[in-house]
Length: 106
Image (cartoon, rainbow, N blue to C red; front, top):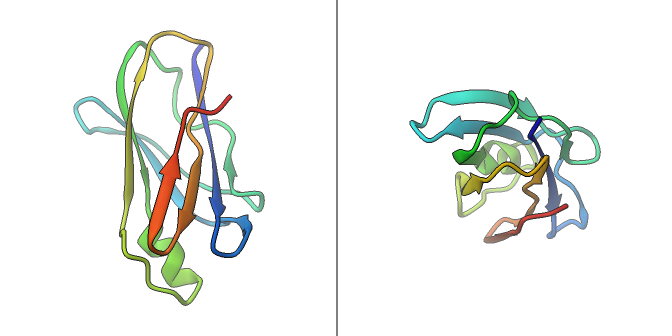
């Protein structure tokens, strides 16, 4: 079974990004799942079991920054990735109002 998780850290505050909406889309851009980051900025299980193919994770950063009383430059962060059949994928996001970084985590 191949699973997906995520972790979002607000690097401007040095704290987890709580309450950030995250979506998982398949290659046809169909929404497979939605979740909101927990108090630790994590989404532990996003979506159904993944089969090999291309996917997109959409982080709704504008909503998050508005909830913090801020305005961010990027309204959404979209990360496309390929599943090759490993048992687990982790897509973290390091976020600030004017920049972001992502990588394949463990």
